[in-house]
Amino acid sequence: RWWVQDAAAALPAQLLGDIEGKAVIDLCAAPGGKTMQLAAAGANVVAVDVAGPRLKLVAENLERTGLKAETVKADALEWAPSAPADAVLLDAPCTATGTIRRHPDILWSKTEDDLKALTAIQAKMIDRALEFLKPGGVLVYCTCSLQPEEGERQISAALQRHPNITRKPVEPAEIGGLAAVTREGDLRTLPPMLGAEGGIDGFFAARLIKG
Image (cartoon, rainbow, N blue to C red):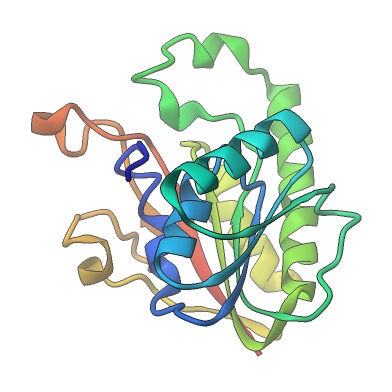
């Protein structure tokens, strides 16, 4: 009947809006919290992840909660859907520095080389995800990172590479009135937010529309 997500991790899927009956691809889907959110909202979900054991966990959680989604074990940079999708949710691999309150060692376990390698992968995944969309389709890109290279700068670079995409700003009402919208209209949560409830993960998310 339920699954656990950090409050910040639950926000990016909400940025897709009303997805009932729509085709949605969840890239880097494991362990499946966002997949279940999308399925619970009535979307026809394809959950893609390269890690077999973690993808099995997605399937087990779907079965446990009585929700349905197609699971695909594949590298998102090599896989392609059978038909263009209405929306893509890309929770890209990242340094995970936004999880510092639960993993305080994260700032010592990640290096500049890790950051460079991950940002290169993120850019490729954004480009690939845009290929999966119908004209007018929505891409929500997110990372649990505090690093601007994996968030704001990544989206600025994507907008320069793809003149046919535009940013659709996030409205505070879409995220429960949380004061976590940047001047550019992206989502940016920080660990001290909701301090009375124990804080939340640091997350970045941007919503792009394919022309």
